[in-house]
Length: 236
Image (cartoon, rainbow, N blue to C red; front, side):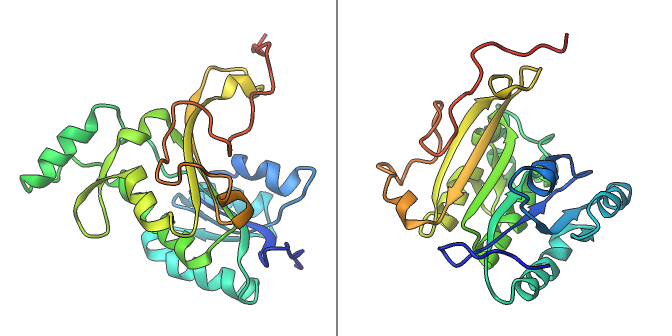
């Protein structure tokens, strides 16, 4: 499998984490631009089997991402011969995130009571490690709209807001913007507001950022696409 090279030096390909059954990879692999996905990672065996059936050219890593992150990085480096991927997509499970969890989790952690913390919220940490390791031109993270208010234990075992942690670890190399989008405005026949976080390491993009210290905005950032539908599509 050969990959076109971008002006930035990155190879025109993608890596997806928390890949599920591969529905989110359809626009990449089968869309008009044909972005090959060199590696996918999924916890559940039956979903990984579905990925292998539908995406035979991708390397499928099945299991716990904490244990697989180094193998994923090694595979991508080897496949791209030391170059960087153009895109990484990571959307960890969102069931543990809530708008009222920040204060409770911080208090539980400070008191040494961590049982209430949902470990799924910390799956962003190995994802960020892979961003730091592979250094894609772009990364996209999609999750529930209240993720901006979620606190987790960071890599130092200290409570920290997820977006603030991302800024601390990645903002030197990336312009990062996080905004809630209503997917119904993009042609999805369902009201579905999600928080979409976009990061870009290209200098020409970073120069457009007039507030690099601010990640979250309740309005769409300049990195987020404009809504393309005035009239909503219904299931009918």
